[in-house]
Every structure is written in structure tokens, then in C-alpha cells.
Image (spheres, rainbow, N blue to C red):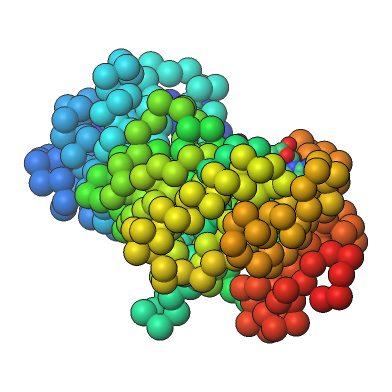
Length: 395
Ligand SMILES: Nc1ncnc2c1ncn2[C@@H]1O[C@H](COP(=O)(O)OP(=O)(O)OP(=O)(O)O)[C@@H](O)[C@H]1O
Ligand SMILES: [Mg+2]
């Protein structure tokens, strides 16, 4: 097996890569280049990946448009193989390369250190891609629960809830969990869970040939073997088409036992799209009359849109705050019973700031216990026992 395949006529470039790596990769490096190979991109992709390499580096001395076509073919046929383009890296080329599924661009006259760094970085991320691809694909009878956390006002605890819920579900042993950050402009699920994502949902919008179950897995950030996170774009200017959200949620629902979706404040297209595909909605609010009224308006809007199928739960966050209204007042404004009450506690922001969820950081705290009770609503084994649990009251 060759770990690295160099697709180039340049023996000098091969020598350079061998020198840069020393003994590390030499035994598993191969140069493949035949006359006319690049004229048929699909057959070139097949030839270059026939020995299951981790990396295929295309160039130098390959016309860029042909190299990009082969990169696209590899991305479609063999998404676990990472393509590095060796060419003069202009901003336009980078843009085209990323759209063709290329993982990195190396200039032909790169020095040893740069070659070593680029290949090591790509090898590491390829390793992660392979692990993600090992997630088994579901069958039609394993459609999971899609749980969307909804609140029109900012700062009421959507992200605290979504992250702790996802971590609790993942720890339950009832299947793998996907957590999607649909706060597309300012999502902070990645930071909240201490992740350093390599990819975000923005990358999905650029997959050549459209999103497949396989390409989707490649863009998830694994937190452990049970929890996989699709992070929000790095840039608030990124535009994620509705169709990308739709396809993503559908595919995740087929492969994961639970899909938890964090949303942004407001009620935008992405949130509505997720709600449409949800089996369960968790409405969250704190004891603020204006936030409660806004949430009631969202519920009315869903009713008038005919979105009545998903189960609905109401979680009251910071339920013990002394702010002039009581949980009963909140339930009256929302016109729903409260399923779970979460107490106010400084350990919530502290844990979020540390990038570690409360349910792991302070598992015996009342607040962690409330988050676990929310998970209990969605777990087969614990659903009945945990239903209607609220802290400080009979469960
Ligand atoms: N039960 C709680 N006790 C104390 N602090 C809390 C509690 N729940 C959330 N917080 C804190 O309140 C702040 C807002 O919470 P969070 O980010 O989860 O809200 P959000 O609804 O996701 O906000 P946004 O709409 O801006 O994304 C955070 O600093 C969080 O740590
Ligand atoms: Mg949030």
C-alpha cells in the first residue's frame, strides 16, 4: 500500500518529497504518471487511488484544469482520499481548489519544512476522515430522533441545553449522536464543547456533486466515539442554502440514533427547515416576560403553519431566578406545562467558558441532573421515569 501517491511527471519533485520526509514516508511513497492519464478524469482517479492511498498529490507539471477535474472525481468516488494540489497558489486557484475538494495547495518550489508540514497536516485530517467514515450507515428502519432546540430570544440557554443534551444522550449508550450548530452566523457549539473543527457546515455547501452520506461524515468533528458535531461556519458571511440544511438533517437522521440541533435567535429559514424535519421540539425560555411572549408567538406561528407533528417540550431555564414571575406564570404565558426546570447556576457559564459541558464537569450538580432529565425524555430506557422531572420537586 502507498500512503502517498504523487501524480506528476516530475522526478525532481518526487526526490524533494522523499528528502523532506526522510524515512517517515519513503517506503510508502509512489509516483504514478502515464502518458494521457489526465485526459479521462474518472479513470485517472481510479488509477491514482487503486492502492488505497491516504494522499494523492497532483502536480507539478499538470495543467490546473485537468488536475482539478481529477480532484473532483476523487472527491466523488473516494472521499476518504485527501487530494493535495501542487501548483502556483493564487487566491483564485485556492477558491477553485477548495470547490473541487482539494484539501491543501502546495507551491512547486516549497521548501522541505513546508512540504513536511503540509503532508503531516493532511495525513492527520485524513486519519480523522477515515474514522468518521467508519460510522455505519443506517437503514430505513433506523431513522433517529431529530430534536431541535428552539427559542426566539438570544441568551436564554439554547446552546447550553443543546450541548448538554447531546453529551448526555451520547453517554447513555443508546446509539450515536449528531449535534448540528444551525446558529449559522454566530454558532458557538464548537467552543462550548472545546472542539477545534477542521470543517464546518460551510464546507458541505461546496461538496462537488452534492452531499452524500459519505461526504457528510467527512465534515463532522468527532468529540468521542459517540458524539459527532457539525459546527457552524467560521465566517458569519457564509451563505448556507436551505437545501444544504435539509439534506444534512435528513441524512444525519438516517445514520444517527439522535440528532440534536441548536438554532439561532429569531425564526429563520434554517430553523424552520430543521423544525420541519424534527420528531421533537424543545422550547426553552427563562423567566423573562418578553422572551416568554416571543416564544408563545413562535408556537402560534408553528400552529398556523400546520407544524403540529413533532412532539413539543417546554424547558424553563433559570427557573429559580427571583425576577417577579414564577414558573406557573411562565407556563400560563406559554400555555404549556413545564416538562423540565433547570436551576440557575454559575457552573453553567463556567463550564461553557472552559469548553466542557456541565454534565461532565459537575455531574452531581442539580443543574447537570436537570440536563440529564431532558435527555431522559428521549431515551427509551429512561423515558417514563424521567418524564415530568423537575428539580426540587417530586419526580
Ligand atoms: N441555567 C443557567 N444558569 C446560569 N447561567 C446560564 C444558565 N443557562 C445558560 N446560562 C448562561 O447564559 C448565557 C447564554 O446561554 P446560551 O449561550 O446557552 O444561550 P443561547 O440561547 O444559546 O444564546 P444565543 O441565542 O445568543 O445563541 C451563557 O453565558 C450561559 O452560560
Ligand atoms: Mg446559542
